[in-house]
Image 1: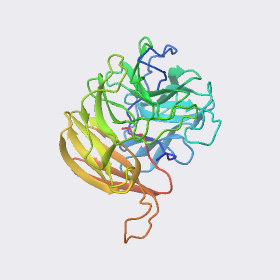
Image 2 (image 1 turned 45 degrees about the vertical axis):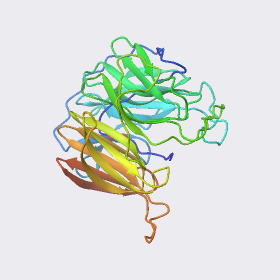
Image 3 (image 1 turned 180 degrees about the vertical axis):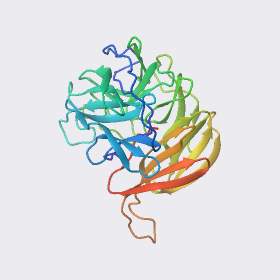
Image 4 (image 1 turned 45 degrees about the horizontal axis):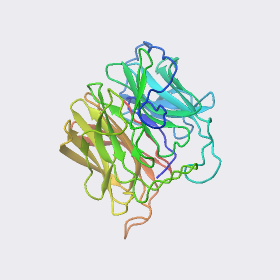
Length: 369
């Protein structure tokens, strides 16, 4: 299910910091304090995105799907964009990462030690001015950084450089002093963890977690894995280090998996994909509204055969979601259709279509208001 993605941020934050073994502090540089930025001019409702064409960070209209401006370059010091989220009213968090360099063509690529690294920057939307908040060394990876609602902490997916393939855990970093701890670093390899999102209390994150499936995970140096199982939604307390990913859990319906989620004030929105195949790529996808206690409230159909999607939710702006749809093979009795990314926006209880992008990649990912 690995695909070249176009990252879209509906402006929230998640950071990837590295580490092996049990919960431990991750040695990092002390971060700079987030800077204040000029106010954005009044204009259309927008979200942030990473272009599928060249990987640059863009601001995109949530009403038309058109690019309004470019905010950050696709490359920085040999690193590529690995996450976008909102950092206050007038700035974004942009995560850049590199590596690992590969020694083979197998899944997992036979990663080479010392070939990784990452930075998290706060970038002003109007001026493009960047401030470094977090940097990790060549044996660590960062991606998808997100700032807590109280502005005091960053959370991220994290992994060592070797092996990084299906080996994520969470890292939390206190901005004032750079103290960093991990959650789930003892979780066996070959699991799946989605991009984490802070809840309003700045103490928990919401994510989808998939345990390893099938045979025991391969632990060789090339990093290959069996597929993961279906993902459940989890609400994880990140205020202290823990060896495992634990917390209140909502399993998907039988034959389904959770693919993306985002909290919005007291509610949660999530995308559930279903299908008879274990990949869940051959059936319907649905946007589901849940209560804070993860009880289902409402649902909206969004298409068939999703292989990648992202959404972001905001109590005032609604929900924006990007869903890659491609049935291969097509349902019985239907002709093959070209793959496409559908951008929709939920306002109140009405799910409205914004735009459609054709092509073989997910055109929008990591949405953020």
